[in-house]
Length: 260
Image (cartoon, rainbow, N blue to C red; front, side):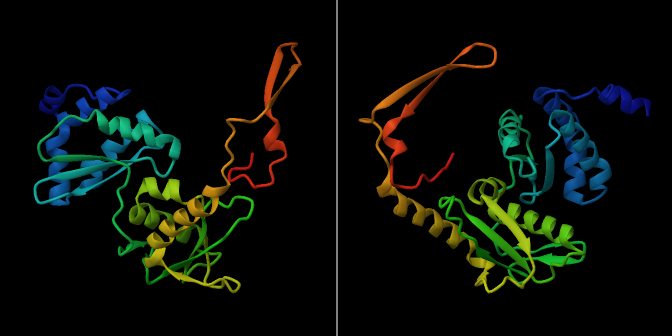
């Protein structure tokens, strides 16, 4: 025990990216061994790493595995929290170059032909399908319902978590958060909605984006020649407030793609 203390020194609290990577480099050999041998991964790697990541950002999490026969990959994830994406990317951007290691920010897309097992349930294109929900108030948004064959009120939380984990891995963490505006998880009884095979989800997303661009590209309003009015008032503290109002848009007969 004394030898270990002399080797590593006191395990100081990690408070910034530089401190985290310095701490990681001191232990990277034992971390690599745990991953490559698939032995005591939680005790000798994940538990230690997660405690340091949480010090940097409460949304940080990670996954790890062998990228190839000699290279271990550490993925820093933001658990789908869009506001945290930039911090995960910044942390990875200052990672040191360590032989035998690959560092990745956010879960990359692995494709829809994967299977994830969780709490006795499978999440794949055999057990799940989807249908689209169009919203006339927000025509640019993509809203879908993922249907799982075994969804019920008793396992709702498990199936929902598993479905979102599947999407994060299949589409990639960034795509799941930015391409899908609203996702619901439900049972096979969809009230007559036509189910689409899950394997077609990528094609569907490409089609929806293309459809929106083509449909609304011609109704864009050019504001260069518009007339404006200036409104001035005071707030409760007597401080002035000034607003610039586009008079032309007040009478525009088209529908805004991003209503305020």
